[in-house]
Length: 196
Image (cartoon, rainbow, N blue to C red; front, side, top):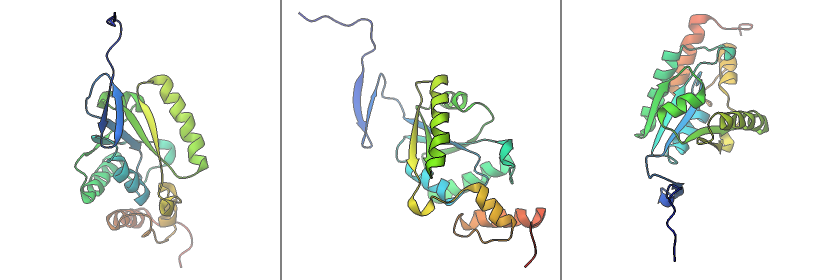
């Protein structure tokens, strides 16, 4: 004689895009990929392209971290990321600016996961700590890490800006459009270091 459970929400597993989803509902799988994107690099583009395959909708959250001494304003970075996403032809990606706790932003977007890219061990230590803190704030939102493509692992926005500020070539690290944005900004603000 079977008993009917009355205290629990029925759970079910479904297969969506090669991912087994276990949950009370079969709603849209939304992910958030946060960052300053100052500027957006080929490494970021790789994570966006791959991350878009894991979710029904990927929201790129462009935020400000004043400790990173941004080269571009939030509005400029949002426009830059939107342009790069449009060039990739990704129809399930949306770009949104935010200035709040990441978990509050993710909750507002209805996200079930935070997407983060990892380049090296140093990234992992920082990201592991952040994932733990975020889990304390909202355990319903998972953090998913994607390893950077091997050819793109050394790329970091901070280094791209530094190379450009000292007159170096950033062609291998960013798209042609982003390179033009960075070069224009360096010309407007002035180069650093000795002239050649």
